[in-house]
Structure formats: structure tokens, C-alpha cells
Image (cartoon, rainbow over all chains, first blue to last red; front, side, top):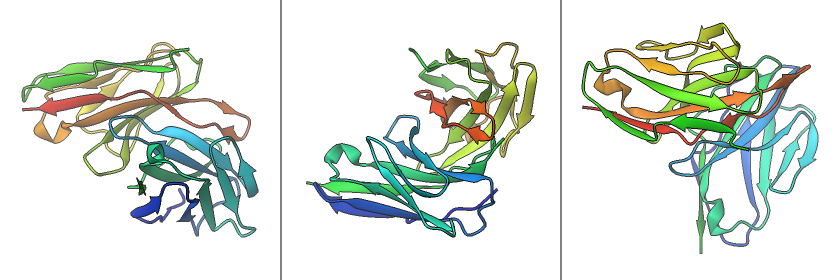
Length: 110
Length: 115
């Protein structure tokens, strides 16, 4: 399973765009990249998943360079309610042993 | 659409007691998982199941048991509770179509304290 590295914490002001980068140097050919969001006292929530280039949904964008050794989760114009821990996971078909690291704790400041 | 339902939400156990954490999903997902999360830490996989009648150990299975008699239910059994099992337990499910394992859906968690 590919190991991921992401910053422990980040601070941002309301209204700013936030980019959280995850490194996954040993990503395999059939691995997908998935991001989750976790609020205190809740289970993680699926945000976005991608394989290459760019994926966008109503919540976030995911940028994946050609070599796929890293990925960047982009949250547009964050609000206080975006304060949470964000996890980057890498795994492919049959990845039923995904590992959640400590994630990135995002604090949005008024 | 209930998703993944966990019961109970909170429980205090005495050392040596046993209990079962219940997990039910109504999305017809074939995969189900149990994770534990200690304070300030990520989630660690305890057990998982790829379908009814099939279970396997994750990263931290000691002190726990599971069963999967139906697609919907995946209970986690704690035998002889120990203080080290104080944690928040999350159940999750996911589906897989072809080569893609879609995102996990998590329950709201069970906060367990062993005293």
C-alpha cells in the first residue's frame, strides 16, 4: 500500500482558497487518490477521488500531476465550517485495507 | 436513506466485561470495515469483510472478533475489555464496481470507555 505524507496542520482565513498537498511517491499504476474530511466527533466523509489530471465536484478540486507522485486538494473560499481534519488515501482495486494517517488539521480563522 | 448506522453511541465498560458494537448499512455495499480512532490519531483498521461469510484481520485485530452473516450487518465483539480499548469505533462500508473501489461511507461512531 502506498504511503502518504501530508502536513500536520494548516491555518487559513475565511474566504481564502486552501490547497493541501499530499505526497505518495510509491503510488501504483492502478491506485486511485481519495480525500476525506472529518469533523470532531464524526466519522470521515468522502470528498473527492481521482486518478490523474483534475477532478472537480461541488465541494473541492483535486489536482494530480502527470507523474502522480503527489496530489493537491483545493478548497475554494473556505468558511469556518471547513475547519476539520483532511485525509489523503491511496489505493487501487480491492483496496480494502486503506490506511488513514493523522491527516491535515485545517483551522479556518475569522 | 440511513447509510451506516452504529449503536450504541456511547458506552462505559468495566475491565473484563464484553460487549457487541452493532453496525448496519442499507446501501447493499459488499465491503464493510471496523476502525478505531484514538485521540489525535488517524484511524486504524481492526477487521474488514468483503461479503457475507467472509471476514479478515486488519492492522489491530487483537481483542476483537467479527462476523458477517448478512450483507447488511457487521457486528464487532469485544471480549474481556481492557483500558487500551478505550477509543472511538467507526464502522464503514463501500462498494466496488470493476476496478474502482468507491468512497467509504462511515457511521457516526461509538465512543467506548473501559474503566
